[in-house]
Length: 148
Image (cartoon, rainbow, N blue to C red):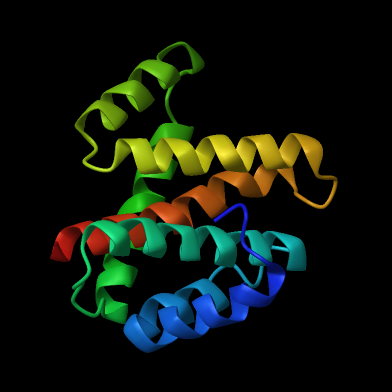
């Protein structure tokens, strides 16, 4: 994905829209009230990366419905709120327990590492929005993982 020519990206987005229209709509609409243009482009690109990685492993993925995305987003926001209430001394331990049970932990870890790396080298990315972008991406992963 990193060696893609910029001209190939619209074709990937179009393909995602044909195969997973609700995921594309989710990527285009979610976070529009808190993310800047660059962050929204990052979310869209990372969402396409998720789809391409999972599609490479599972060529037939049932169409993800909007209700499923909404359900997983709500669960992920609740998890974020729970983590926000954790004492700092227990925060990393709780995150590690969550990740240990997570079915797609390598993919999620890659995405989070990439977001953190991009945010340190990019002045257009608000440090406070990295968590929300990660939640939106995790929502997509969770939704796809549910139907596989």
